[in-house]
Structure formats: structure tokens, C-alpha cells
Image 1 (cartoon, rainbow, N blue to C red):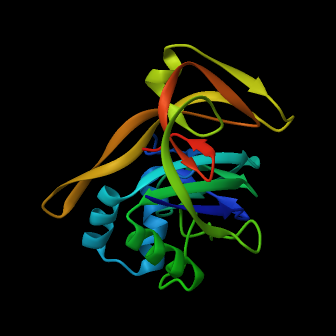
Image 2: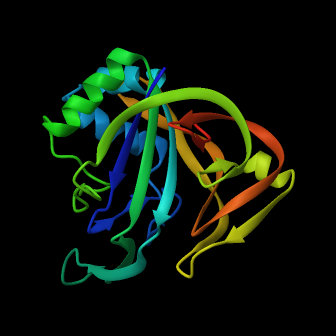
Length: 227
């Protein structure tokens, strides 16, 4: 199995949490569907191609730097007689993510080549959040081998964290562990689709020691839990 590691440092990022209407909250990391969608867009895939890619790739992420959390508020104006509806949007300014993908050799190589010359502009969430590389060599193909690990810097499953864990802080700019419902796939019915969620725990600026070892993929030796 081959792995693809992408280093991203956008000027801003917004990954909407679809739980609220007047607060456009954001995950502090690219969810699985968003990250694989980034590859699908770069490869120029259709909706059907994106659906297929969701089933072919495994994904994990390390939040190297959460960036600065910023809120912007706008008032929605419909007509002179209607009330104003203030909507707050959460953004992350200059975050740094390491995205990990694993899959068939042919798919990984195609995704890597597409990132170097994308068909569609890659985004980090919404259309205002463009993808920017963190460094010159921002994408690389590595080996991905199965293993077990209890000390991780990547997203971890919520159920494994609940069995026992502790967070060790390494940097001042950190995110304490928090549970989210991350979209990992979609179910389709006619022209509509609904997200399939999984509970995950995200953190940054340190590492988590789990009470039990979990199955991981080793990307050039880096243990990452993949979904």
C-alpha cells in the first residue's frame, strides 16, 4: 500500500460544522469528505468519481498548528421590511495541516500528479479558503504499513479516547482534545445525499497517550489513525 502526505498551510480555512444555522462553526481540521474532495477536484473527477474515491482511500490528519481562531459577523438583509439576521462565521487563520492518504498504488500516484497540476482549484473547505502548500515539497509519496500504536498526534476515534487517554502538551499554541462528529462518507438517495458521521477527537500542540494500542498506518514511520 502506498501513502500520500500533503502539507497544507492556507491563509484561512473553514470546514463548516452542519449543526447550526446562525453560527457557521468550523472543524479545526479538514474532515475526511473534504480532504478526499480536494483530491477529487484536483483529479477532475465527477460526483460519481468522488463517490468511488471515498471508498478507495483511507485518511488521517495531524493538526501541526491550529492557527488563530477568527470570527466574522455579517447581517443578512432580505428586504426593507424584514429583520436583520446576524450570522457569525468561524475561520482559522494560517493553520498548518498534514494530510495522510493511503490506497492502491495507481490511485495514489494519480492523486499526487493531479496535485502538481490540478484540474480544478483546490480548496480548504469553502470557496474562500484556497489551498496553499506549507513548503516547496508539499506532497510526497511514502510507504504505508499497518501497525499498532498508543501514542498519537493524529485524530483518534472518540470511543478509543473514552476508554482512557491523557494529553501531553508540547507547545503553547495548542488545542485541548475535543470530540467532534466528522463526516466520513455519504449515503445517496435519488439526487440527494446525507452525511455519515463518526465520533473523533481532535487536538494540536502535543500528543495523546491512549490506554490501549489501536490499529494505525505507519506513513514512513509516522503512526496515523486512518478512517
